[in-house]
Length: 125
Image (tube, rainbow, N blue to C red; front, side, top):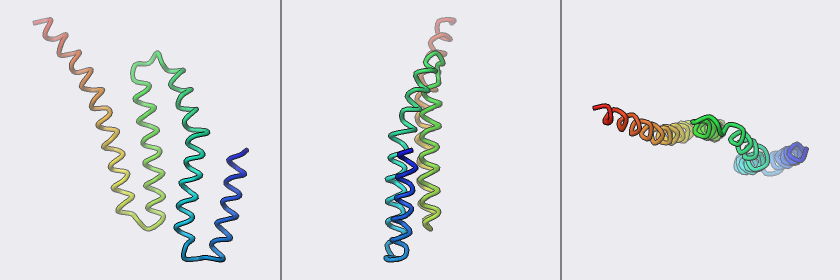
């Protein structure tokens, strides 16, 4: 409920700023978006991810999947915010950077598995 109240207050402030100070509306709306996102991230998404990881400890790659999905979601949100504010190229760069970070994370996991398989194959020889 707190988040809804904060969102409504931010909306009212944005409408007021749009009517009074039109040139600063885009800047302040982006700042409010990040503030609201950080509030949502710390109060909803982070506890949900921690609880989900606690429930899925028996799965070998659950942590990597949850982290990848969270990073993808955050990257998509930031990219969408940049595209909506006429920074399409920067939005694409940010989203591609997030994808590369996810691939590098999985590459590290893949190398661990590959070393294990390689050790097993060396024992068989």
